[in-house]
Image 1 (cartoon, rainbow, N blue to C red):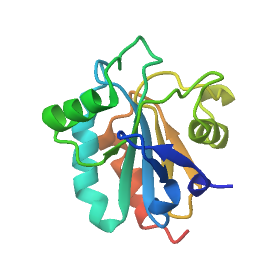
Image 2 (image 1 turned 45 degrees about the vertical axis):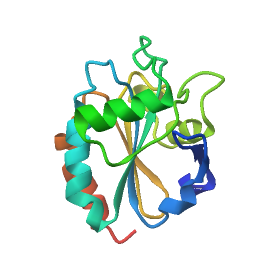
Image 3 (image 1 turned 135 degrees about the horizontal axis):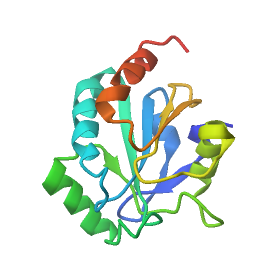
Length: 162
């Protein structure tokens, strides 16, 4: 099993097979519009602009499970990301990342790359998962890990022969 076995809904409610991203290095992020980490959208966009021609994609998944920091509709979230941060990477439909209603994609990501002391739960918004071109989850980054700080890991994965 790998990440390409999953489907997710885009902001319009259309089902998207992640197989569409096969062969690309992915950074999967749970996001929120009213979080102290929200300015990371800027760094994510910079990283996306820098690496997208090399086969890099960012898949953002808004989530309202942490302090109610993503209360908007999918359309409001799209507008917020575009107008405030110039986001051009994919921002999907709002989902749950923890609990019994957690999206199967995030259940998989958490099981493949547990957090500190082996815990699987996502601690907060802007937890990031780096995925290889073959769909294997390589690493989990904490919310406080800024995009500029993980760019070297992304670049290393882009240059990997796996």
